[in-house]
Length: 262
Image (cartoon, rainbow, N blue to C red; front, side, top):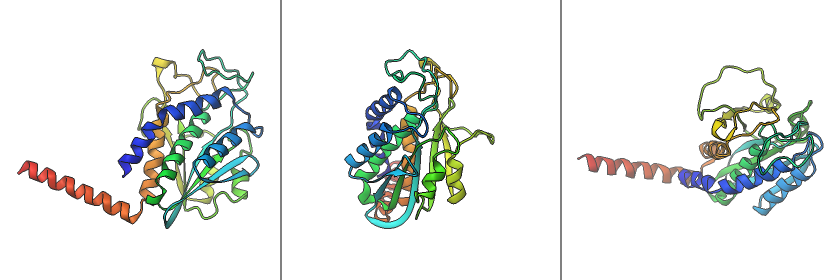
């Protein structure tokens, strides 16, 4: 079952690219996001997902309800842009003078939308709920996380997870960092994890640092990030029936391997 979910994420790549590039062309600054949250809410509602808008101001929260009761896991993506002039030479360059997505938030959002689609389509196999936290204003203090928390976005949540695109490798250990990220406010309230996805690719000039006028990232990183989030949900919320199916498949595979060896 998890393999099917992961395959569905791979199949969503073209749609993730389309969403990401639309956002990249139409960035909105922190606390000034209007069209972006409308877009997010519309897409989630199109999937049949329950949606709250204007959470903490401009945030969007979606709720996916599994067939059976269980834990509640929150997944977070930010969607604001920065006051930087886009200097990249790409077809999807920002159309807003002096504003660009220079920190990958367009990719974070596109990834979580694809994850939402896969989970909604497979909700019958979930035991518990998934809360989708689409957060505004990560880039400007005090940030959007505090107001979304105050507006109840974490009510009933057992654990919260988020991700960021950076670096050139898929899986590495990193030293402690003093980089600012208001995801920390969620972790003050609930247990969870924040992970990085490798997104550097010099072949396509995706090798500039965050907040650089030529910042870009390898869009294949969205697939890796989506698989990471899907795997987290599967670990926590896969139904008992699904786990039995997985164990049965493993047992069958082991039996087949033994037959081949003998």
